[in-house]
Structures are given as C-alpha cells and as structure tokens.
Image 1 (cartoon, rainbow, N blue to C red):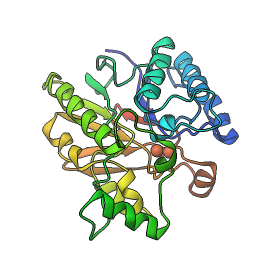
Image 2: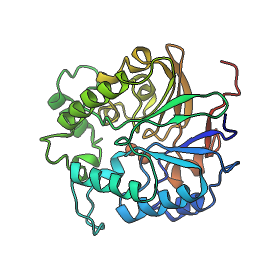
Image 3: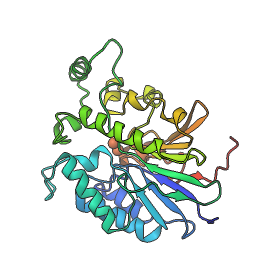
Image 4: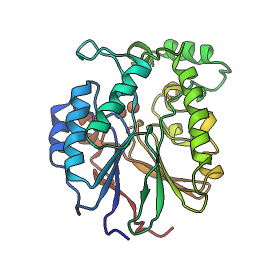
Length: 280
Ligand SMILES: [Fe+2]
Ligand SMILES: [Fe+2]
C-alpha cells in the first residue's frame, strides 16, 4: 500500500494572476500524493499546459478532466481548435506531460483508504436541469435569456462536429456508462467530473436558470448503479461536501479571486478525498 493521499482541486482559472500565484504555491504533503483536477484550469491551451505540467512535476500522478473553460475557443488563444478537436488536443497535451485523462484506462489508487478505481469522466451537460415550468431545452434557454442569465458557453463552447453540446453530452454518456460497467465491481470508484452527477447541488445556485449548464439528468443514478466511493466535481464555485444516497460528493473548486476573497477557502485549497478522516 502506498502512503500518499488522494487530493482534489478544480476551477483553478489560472488566467487570473492571483490564481496563477496560488497554483505556483500548490505542493503535495508527500511526494506520493495524487492530484485530481476536475476542470476549468484555464481557457488558453498554453495556460492549461503550464498549470498541469507544474502540478505533474510535483505530484506522483495528476488526473485531469475538462471543464467548460478548457473547451472554449476564445479569440485570445492562438489555438483556434473547436469542440472534439480541441478536446483531443488537450488530451494529447496531457499525454505528453504524463497527465491521465478520460481517454486513458482508469488507474487504480492504492493509498490508505484504497484500493479505488479513479474514473475521470467527461460527460458535459444537456440542458436537462431545467427551471421550473420548462419542459424542453428551447423553453429552458428562452427563460435564461429572458432572465439575462446566459452562460458564456453559448458563445464560446463550440460543439463541433456535434450539432449541440447536448448531443455531444449524450454520446459521452453512452461511452462512459459502457466503461464504468466494465470496472471491477469489487473495487470502489472515485468518479471525477467537472459537473455534479446529480442535480441537487445546483439547487443553491443564486440564479436557478444557470443549472441547465451544470450537468445532465442522465447521470442521476450513476453513484447508486456503480460501486462509488466518492464523486469529485467543481464548476459551481461553491466548495462544500454533500451526501446523496450515502455517497460523498465533494465540490473542490478554487473559483475566481472575487469569490475566494469573499468566502475564503472553507475546506482549504487542496481537498483530501482519501483517506477519509471524518466519520462516515
Ligand atoms: Fe469554473
Ligand atoms: Fe466550469
């Protein structure tokens, strides 16, 4: 058995100099620690590579999943790839620097509290976390536009070659379910995804219309169907721990400087997922 911890963080948003400085100072407690990075490292590919490479030099293993920000095609990025091609370029970058992605075999972690299978997931969202009274994606988006709460993804996240993020999401869900079903059911899984796999954590959003960009109902039973040790996610920028059907869900975001200056880091910046120290 290894002696390191399983650590997680997300939403590093290193295009902000204050966040870049935080990342420069992130260090493991032991050189056997693994780090799970649950998306939103940055928008520009060079910034994503800078942060992940730095972390990969410090941690025994880094595991990354994409957030919506990595998938944005912004005018400031010399890399103008869109959608699936952009995702593939990110995966290629990770492979070059030794970072595990959703396209790699799921690794097993053997520290205290293990063994667990680490499952980095990329399942996006499909506008199914709809506001009350909306029964379609179109109604849901219209409500968001009327409220003036429209995620920037609508302008910068290009789903090519899929007609929409929702169809890309459905394709990812099918493929991911197949891979999770192949996991050894005797070994618990730590799922890592940018979005919460259940809707409940989005109920506290300040703007309920924003939930439609935060996940999919298609994953609502995954933590019950598969032998799940914990679910690690980010995106909401609301760092906390919640329990769903007895399974621990950890929102591990750093968030924007204006957010962490206000609320601080209620659980620290690096979150230990295993071993578990609080009573379960
Ligand atoms: Fe974020
Ligand atoms: Fe995000």
